[in-house]
Image (cartoon, rainbow, N blue to C red; front, side, top):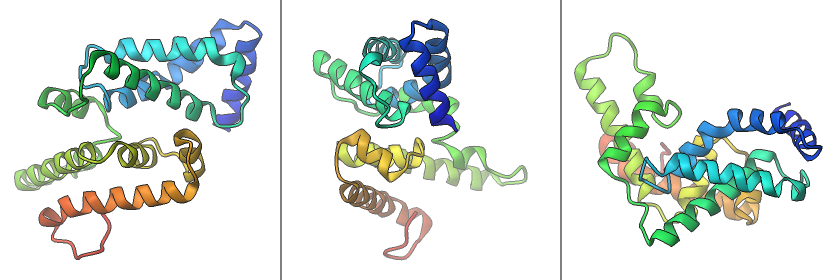
Length: 202
């Protein structure tokens, strides 16, 4: 239903309806900013790069054929925009304390352990939950770029394997392999905290 609604808005944009484009910006701006924030850890740059992403998307709308979901297409533009910015600045997208703090306070989707804690939990449980969330974030940031993109698209953005394959321009089998390897790498970091058995997924 959402993809169909997006496609209808795209058709309106192609006919010159700016309000339709504004609706897509409102719908996806926070997700795009969150995504760019995974690459560019300067929080002041994120809104500018998100705006540049939407400008590029608007200019490229005539070439959008609907072969993939609109968000999948928009995601690729956002990633390319972020990568270009990093290349231009010759900067490495390293996770910093301030960046982690800025995203953890606002991003309810990537910090579910913190937000799903029960009201009667102990301070020890709260501390353990935060440690787990921090460990997961650090483990994701340490992944190779292809594995990091795959796991973020699956677990954070909720895309299907087919959508991820389109977004990353690779076969579905490669997507499954990358997600499996990413989960295993994260599990290795979590096992000391969770005392899980070898082979058990997080």
